[in-house]
Amino acid sequence: MKPLRVGILGEGQLGAMLAEAGTALGVQCSTLSPSRTYDPQAYDAVTYENESLDFQFIKNLSNSVPYFFPPVSALEIVRDRLTQKNFLASLGIPVAPYVNPALFPSIEDAFSFLGREAIVKLCVSGYDGKGQFRMKTKNDIRKIPEIFRREQSVMEAVVSFEKELSIISVRSRTGEIAHYPLTENIHRDGMLIASIARSKNEPSLKKQAEQIANQILSKLNYVGTFAIEFFEVRGKLIVNEVATRVHNSGHWTLDGSETSQFENHLRAGLGLPLGSTRVLRPTLMINLIGELPTDELFAEIPSARVYRYGKTPAPNRKLGHLNLPIDSGQSAEEMIVDVLSRLGRAPFQRVHSLDE
Ligand code: ATP
Ligand code: MG
Image 1 (cartoon, helix red, strand yellow):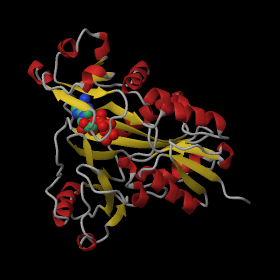
Image 2 (cartoon, protein in one colour):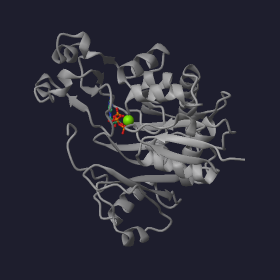
Image 3 (tube, helix red, strand yellow):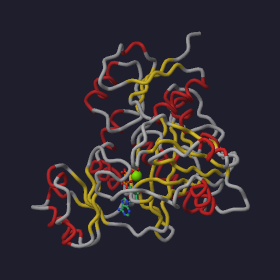
Image 4 (cartoon, rainbow, N blue to C red):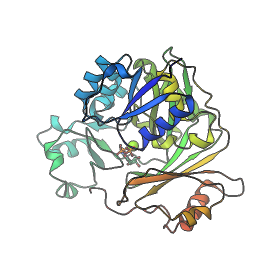
């Protein structure tokens, strides 16, 4: 039998990790660049790793290939922060209070209406906290980059959360849904520094997260891996944002779960049975940002699995990540500080300002 062929749109690390999972499954994966043309019949299925690619291109391609996943209709809603929030709110899912600044005479008026500390986020193409501006007082708006006055954005209240969490879920072509456990995420200035995946979650949080995921995935008639980022406030989950793809906070599944988020994405899209999302061992994922430590430094950290993305170093660019089993003698937070200091980094280091 000929191997199944999957095209993966986008040329970043998520696509590379999907392709690697495909190889292990016996699936032939090719990475596709949106700037080129392809024979649509060369693939049994096509997916993407990045929701910011040219939408018209994705839409056209999806109409010409035998199977495209996740559904373009889901991407169309989620790729724009405003349509995404309107969609979540329409399902009664808790989100931070927000407004559409375009409905006000000025950004200043939108800020006054919201009446509290706010973050304005560009509707499309922001990532790692880029394309966002945070303001406490009217005075702060004077420093707002010009782009926020030109481009569509959403303005939302700053949530004082206790923790940030995310759930990675996967839905098959036949509507079967599997969830990984909630992962705790540590961000600095909008960028993910580390994710902590334990084998058990607080039952009420787990229930809320899975209910929200089930509701969204079913409504979108979704196929593939899906991520939801939450804020935890006094035991209740508020959705920050969702992603129609594999997600950085799910990288721990490469070593900590029976089936990785990457393999399950492909399984879902190819109509194969989903793999178990059972946790093999509690795992800590640490992003390697800006520059890669030397191999000698990595070798000093026992049981670390190092993933290098082969990207050119640049400030605040994700160049790789580490997965480590969480050992019972140390808390995950202590481990993060310890590992970062062994790699020659200040704890939770990130170089730059929010509005870069
Ligand atoms: P990524 O693509 O890395 O997930 P992003 O650029 O899409 O990030 P968001 O998830 O919207 O951006 O924001 C990044 C981080 O900024 C959040 O994880 C959180 O730490 C902080 N943040 C964003 N919105 C809010 C908010 N309303 N209240 C408090 N903190 C926020
Ligand atoms: Mg985010």
